[in-house]
Amino acid sequence: MIDATGMHLGRRFGNVTGILGGNPVHVSPADIERVWTHLDSDTNRRQGDQRAADIGEPRRVTERRKPT
Image 1 (spheres, rainbow, N blue to C red):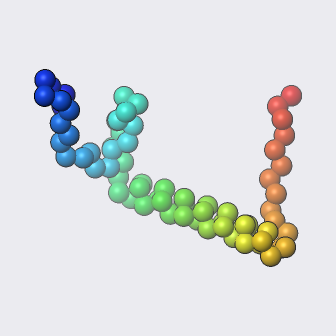
Image 2 (cartoon, rainbow, N blue to C red):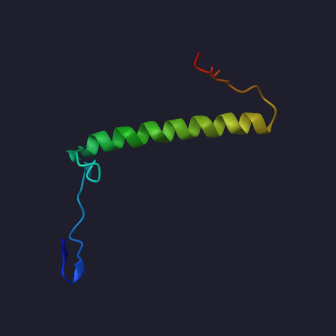
Image 3 (cartoon, rainbow, N blue to C red):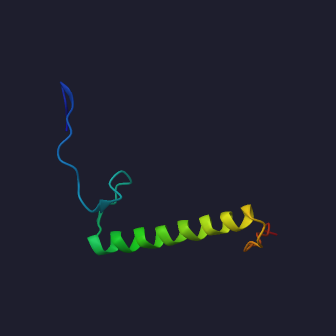
């Protein structure tokens, strides 16, 4: 809340995303866990690729092409 004395914060929103964008959406705890698990596996894969590069093993390469 913002009033004459300034901004006052209430309790935080739990399991809600998109508030600042004007489209708040409730996210279930199971969805949050699924996303974090996916993020963790992506991070572990990238770290494994970096370790392979550090010791000279071949790395998986994703080719990026410029749009024509």
